[in-house]
Length: 410
Image (tube, rainbow, N blue to C red; front, side, top):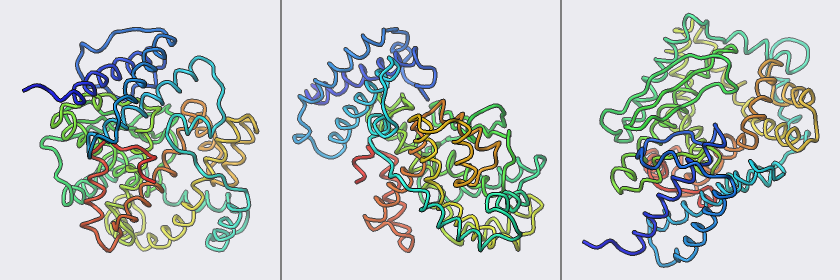
């Protein structure tokens, strides 16, 4: 049967997209986060100028294919390829020396711009924490002292993390049909600028690495298990492979360029996935009854810990502000560290580690908090509220099984 001309054009342009992403990867070691497609598409080394020229040609061809004549998933595919290629051109420009502000860069790469907040916004939240924390002294000092009592001993970390993974998987599998044979391996590493990472290998398998450079508090077990595993990155990538690569032969999803709009969807759904798997008091109950005892911590402290933790989470955008100021040249590294200590309540060591993340990944930081908020608003505005879990999971599964862009969540 002869292929529809639009389908044929998109298939050809998808191959061009893969080749271009892999070519950018030869200039930028961090660009290609995953690739499990045909070996035949590897190995073409192009100059940045040649990549940009070929990408511009592909963008022009895509624009000639009117999306108004497409429906459903085909239209999503077209828009996805177009915006991903535009982000690729922006990354090439940055690699070539073009200067962008933090907000210009995030819009060009991730199809979104994070809101900006004055210091007063965070000060009000810190005042709430001031009344919730025990002891005397500054809020950052007292918060760090409070959190240190909930660090998982290194010898117990693997057991706590595996229990969190098992529960995250069971809760996800009860709502989403996971691909047969899906699996992942866990490694504990050091010397990284991130706390956890999912390296997707294809064939529904991931390598998840957990950084143990700094102390790991008990809440991070569920965060990492859900964000990196179920229903986060591992499930997201597995479903894209199952439904789009295997099901529709859309090979562009065999490659994942890190600095692209796809990352906001990936990180946003992974962060929101924590709440999907462990909504509200269900998380507190699980940690009180299972993880706290495994970590050797008194379970009776779990409710109070999460009351304080909930206030702390309201400071999430402070990290964006520090990155924006630092990367725009409005403050030094030392000043960024001080800002993170004062307003994001990080220890000095963790704040320094975070500035190294800024150096390496730059405006990528918006994908976590802004991405989570955008995904939450999208799902809840469609009726997927906590009291309607069936609908909530249905919308979430559709989101992580299809070509989506941040601008499509608005």
